[in-house]
Image (cartoon, rainbow, N blue to C red):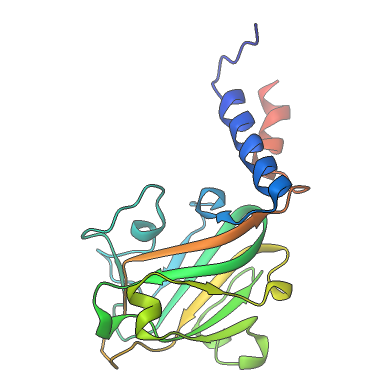
Length: 195
């Protein structure tokens, strides 16, 4: 019988099993379970409506949404606990006029601010979402070759559908597959200290 006094072995094995299944079948899965929630942040978010409200596991559409504060722009900084291959994203807004329209995606930036997102040359992909894209939560396919080994994804929302003062995002999902050779380094670092 295997003993796990600190309760860390079983969750780790389950995580590894999910990762192997996703990679083995190379099927697209939600990458939200691979987020590093300690590093998630969003620039220009309203204090009561932050990024963690829309990226939590098991989130249901309700009064939890991300909303911009000063103007319509948002910069979502999303970090993963292992390298992933991102294939598509899905964004939904229940308020159509304030739903995102023009978006720039960046990858693997250690830190990024609004001053860094103006240059289109640096963007991994630029998207112009339609009203249908944001109301129907459609998967928006990405240029797969540009999103092969992603440790962080930065989503710059430049404008919204109706030219409103505030942008609202009710849900965001990121789809792809984890890179199987990469392990969660935080767990590996903990192991020697625990012994």
